[in-house]
Image (cartoon, rainbow, N blue to C red; front, side, top):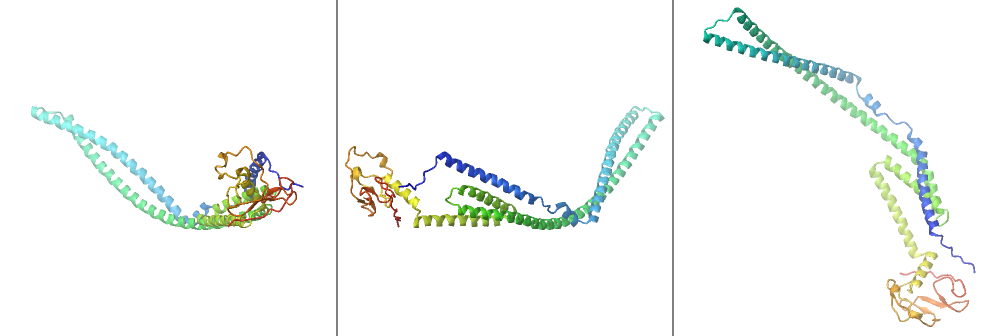
Amino acid sequence: MENKVKPKAPWTHRFAIKLFTLLLSIFSFWLLGFIVHDIDTIEGPSYTEYENRAVSEKNVLTRTELRKEISLLRINIENEETNQRVLKSSTNNLQKTISQILAIQKLDTANETQRGEEESKAFSNSLNLFLENQKQFQAINTTISTLTTEKQILSKQLEDIESIIEIDKKKGRAEYYTVLDTHNSKIAFYKLSLLAPFLLLALFAAYKTMGKPSFPIYLSFALATVLKVSLIIHEYFPSKLFKYVLLLMLIVAVLRLLSYFIKAVAAPKKSLLIKQYRDSYTHFLCPMCEYPIRKGPMKYLFWTRKTLKKLQLPTTSEPDNNPYHCPSCGTGLFEPCSSCNSIRHSLLPYCESCDDEKEVAIITTD
């Protein structure tokens, strides 16, 4: 009889399929990125253009003139302060000279010594120069005070103009971001419109080929498209909206998995049941309740799935050719073969003696 069980591929082939599926997903993701890249070349609004459009040109010119005047006043104040420092140094030297002359005159008076006309003239010149420097120092102080006051007035005017310009800039920025949001929404719409057919086709093809050899190919395209669409949603839409979209996608995925496992329990696939039955027979346990199958050399022993490896079996035993039902749940586990009348596994498809095939009964537990 022809064996309908498909042999399992070597692990190297299975690993290669998974690896190349991943690589195909990455390359598909890059390809989709190149496709939507041209949409990014659509020119958007200019921030500088909207800002300059909102600001009055007259206010900008006024601000420029005020800045120039304030800068010139600052230079003049610095120059006057430099002159004042030089004048102060000269005045200090004259003050020292006058003090020395007065000290000499006092000494001459004490000694009853008479100085000449030149010494008196030098003293008079120094005193006049000192007084003149004092007048200039006061004049410079007045000039600095006047320039500082004028600079403060212009600075206040500049501050008012800049406040008006900043208000206009905020209006321009608000208009710019409104237009930018509209532009980004259009870009996102173009990208999603371009990717939507790829996404639907990839998901449809992956769903239709599920369980078939070509499934990994379409799965890789589907994964790449879903990832690219998710990134576009995250980039162009508010984070709150993205959270809701992501949450809805996760809910749909969980519901899909939950329905799959519920269906697998309510109506399990034949291949999965046979695998479960085969594993239970291998461990000498009932597939329904995992009560030990006490048959043949195992008749007077007790074990569990964990303690089976430590169990010591009898070295000799007689074959048990009797049917067997689980004493715990009543499930038939061994029965006579309808073809050769040998004892066969009730829940496996083939007889180990004659290779006779029978339909495996789907038995579910509550």
